Image 1: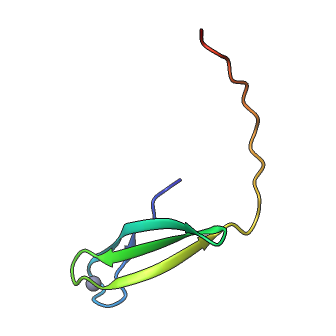
Image 2: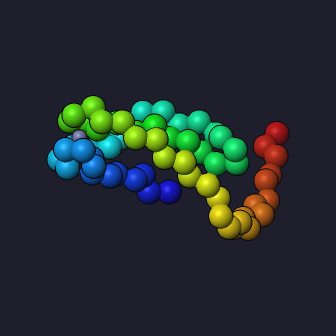
Length: 62
Ligand SMILES: [Zn+2]
C-alpha cells in the first residue's frame, strides 16, 4: 500500500504524518500530526469491501 501523505489543513504547508495507528472497531485509527505547525488530526480507516486474497502455497522448509 502507498502511504498517504496529506497536506496540513491548518497551515497548508506542512505535511501530515502518521504518528500513531491502532486498530479500532474493525478499522484503523490513525493519529496524524503536521510536521510544521503541530496540528493534529485523527482519521479512521475502515474496510468497506472485502478483497479476496489469493491463496499462496506455503512450503515448509525443513
Ligand atoms: Zn500545519
